[in-house]
Length: 121
Image 1: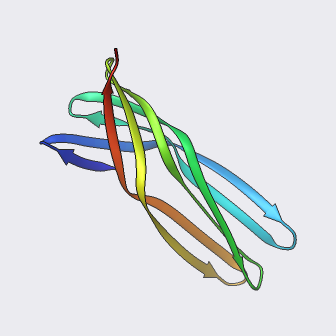
Image 2: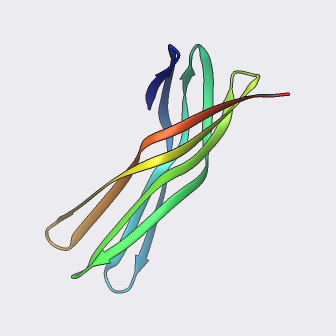
């Protein structure tokens, strides 16, 4: 994730991915993956964020296709020693596809987010 505000560069990379599988009878399986941890820089300050809230969406269609996707809604952490950082996802992109025989997949990602920095007291 990259961006800039008032010529301050933000560069964050996902360093840990959360994963989960769910199975339901008959033949419906759902796989989920989301950003569990991110690290990077805001300006020259090191930032580490961890997921506070992840969203999951599961759907199915006939015959035997399960579609699951997940994304991180909220992250928080520290930026340097004096700032708290909060990242809130505001827009989510999604893609759905399938393959033969009976293989459904879906994935989601954060299109845009709001990063808030708060001074520790």
